[in-house]
Structure formats: structure tokens, C-alpha cells
Image (cartoon, rainbow, N blue to C red; front, side, top):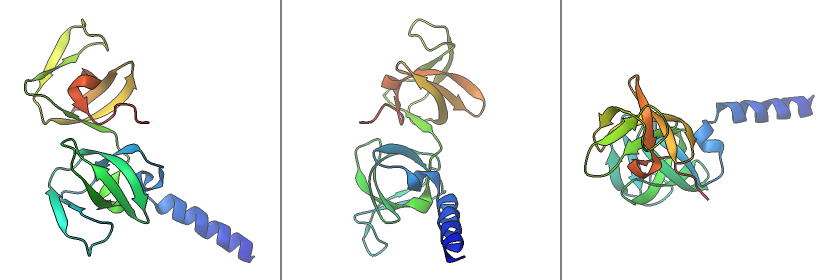
Length: 155
């Protein structure tokens, strides 16, 4: 009976943990709260470096320590966030100085169907061969890895 209770508690704990908290680094995650603090170390005792007020902003997860994740943002800032602030939801951030093309197909010569400004965050899917399907509130198109931060292959 003890064995069954023990196994049930392990299964419950695994299901209760967010997906972003279960993967091994490096991997991608997104901010899942309206406000998230990046700290200098893995505890609320450490000072806040940055306060992010941008839900769904993609972050690269570099390391894990208990319930904390060492993260890197698109500007290269690194610090620690609690895992409950993160989600495994795949998002990308448009980078560069000029608007970027969203294309009808995952090809450089494909028809441009939308243009998106740098700083726009969207959901991404179907990433392969240097392209991802990028969705901003239902407006979808393919964007090159070169124009986006948030899902290039990690080693």
C-alpha cells in the first residue's frame, strides 16, 4: 500500500509541474505572467536585475537549480527566474531594425503576406529548415530564424 501511495504522489507531482520546469537545459520557454523578475541568483533573497512586463516573451533556459531557472533574454541578459513564471509555450520575438516579412510558404522567395515590426511577439510552430510559422492574433505567416529570436535549434 505504501508503494502505491508513493508512486501516486510522484505521478501527481510530475503532472502538477509546468512543462517548462521539467525539461533539461538548454531549451526555450516563455514568460507566463504579466510581471516577472529576473534575479541575480536562484532565490527571492537575491536582488532583482530586471522586471519584465511582457507576457509570452521568449527566454532561453540555460540551467536549473531546484525551482529556479537560469534564463537569457534576447539582449543577452542572464539571470534567474522561478519556474512558476514560465511556460513551455513556444513564442518568438521579431528582431532587427526594420519590419520583417511573414511569407505564405517557408521559402525566401515566397509571397509576402504580412510585415511585422521588431519587438512583436507571436506563437510559433512548424519550425524546420530555418523557418517557423509565426502567429500574431490569427495573422499567420512564415518567418526566417534570422528575423526571429526564440526557437533556433539549441545544442
